[in-house]
Image (cartoon, rainbow, N blue to C red; front, side, top):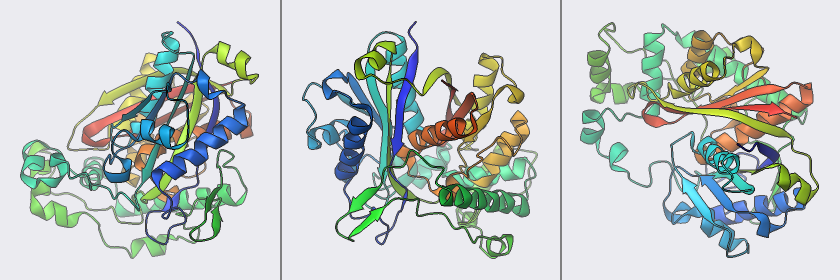
Length: 400
């Protein structure tokens, strides 16, 4: 089996997912073109080498519909023969795109692939695809397909996680993200020109560096209303040890919605010879799982545990973990289940502070992990994300 190498990882800044956000005036096609152009410039890549482009995108409707991977390649003037594939495994879509691309390289189906993701939540709002599993309340309750925040509150209830616990995670995420951004540690960012607002967006917009425990404590629960509509009753029925659900998650300890895109150049050894570039990392292994659908966002912890078991790893054997802060309770679950210390987990903040552009997040997290491994001269790292319905994907890399 061939080795799959990461030759480059780039991303846009995360823009606030609202009309006044720095990226909100830019179409998904234009944002992807910015990254395609930057990837070619950074790597001297001949576009004709590329044998597949795989992008994660969750809300595949409107401007993001019709296979945004292939559509964005056509918009960007790439050769007709370059294929494009768009995948959706909810919030782990970007990691699954990376995993599919690396498997194509490992099995010899391709020598050169591109993977990443795109989500413009200011332009194509979450749930605007009107999928039955979310839009039809009766279907959702009958088939245990719940919203992510409800699952996070269930995790908090099962693990006796308090409001103070989740707010502490959110506050730490904001502090770390603010420090990393101010010191320029996010090397994978490609600045984006917004001619409509006449600005260049070069940093992540969602960070709230002045967040305090006091400001977080003042925010109301975000998902108690859903609980009253039958979700709490269903969760309690399925988990008989509970007599109530703790609604500890708020807008402040939940992921911030965002606009962004990400790309990785993944290939075998021959690609490095063709473009004259040394790879930055090797993809060692991956795991994809599905857990309790009522917990919704527990897949990140289970996928990481599965990957570590598969590779006979302990937390001490992994230098850094970049795990999806799909609500603060999931970070605490990961720490407790896996025995990961604060010093190794999301050391530059997570999506609570930085923002969660769903389909793009996996690629962004991979670039963030690789940037930090290089900055610290460390070797191994795991990046993992939860999808909806309990799904999750984790990938182990080795910096070269």
